[in-house]
Length: 155
Image (cartoon, rainbow, N blue to C red; front, top):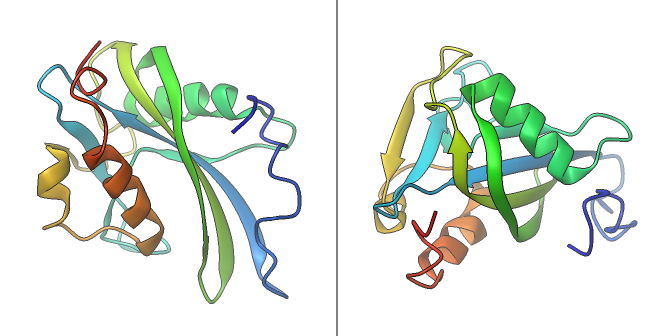
């Protein structure tokens, strides 16, 4: 990611004919113990019942960092204080294509809680391999496993 505009990916993503492109931003909140906060998707949602990193769709014209801050405030009731881009992942599902911008969040104000009644869990990156996540999250988990010790829980 070159900037926070959310427009730097051009037409490289979502090139599957007929598939809608959904630009999503997600935060990997990392606590001082190196655990990452995950939320369970609602049963009726796309990929329902799976664990995911909190976040959601960007609004038209919204920058990625701005969307991250909005989504984490809406879903978790936290204010982002320190965040950095981790990676951008594209994934084509049958019904849609997803561009997932994932950021590490190492400092925030407030206690994360599921404001949309979603269950939350803190997991070490190694524990994530035993849980069920959407396929688009697999590279995110690998990236979290590869973070240097100082960046994980370095808030």
